[in-house]
Amino acid sequence: MGRVVSGRVEICEHSLAWRAEFQSVGQRLRGALGGAALRIDHIGSTAIVGLAAKPIIDIQISVRRLEPMRLYRAPLESLGYVWRQSNPERTKRYFREPPSAKRTHIHVRQAGSWHERFALLFRDYVREHEDARQRYEDTKRELAETYRCERERYTEAKSDVLWAIMRHADRWAAYSGWEPGPSDA
Image: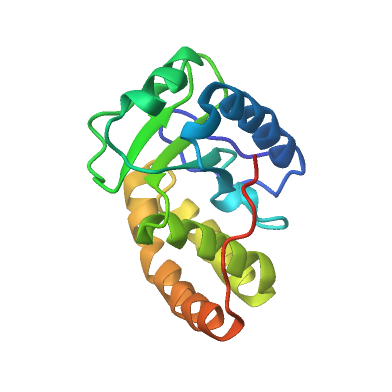
């Protein structure tokens, strides 16, 4: 079974344990954040049943505003999560797992923002469309072989397929009236 080892990209078959891992973490996050978190959602590949993935749980926490950070930073740090201030993406605040814990990525985004909805729409569309799920998985497996020791290049190389899928997802959302469902935690 694949795993993330010091910068190596390894894809493994989908595991039903990922949902349970998210639920456990999500409950702790909800307890610590209370009303500061408008939503807590399982996003990324591990949130899509049947999709092979790197075994990293991605969680999106939606807040009213990114500032002031103290409203969510202190509760996250009380659980051991570490703010990655050097993350270049300004549309989120990024936290990582406590030392020695299983790899977890926490993406804090403003509720209703384009980036918050992007993550939810991609997840929901790929969950509903086997062809998109298979295309994305095939791409991930191929790129993991090509960029096995280059995580940044692996991530960057997925962007063309990701955006192609999102063009379909956008049309699907428009015609289906898609809206995010209830929060996962």
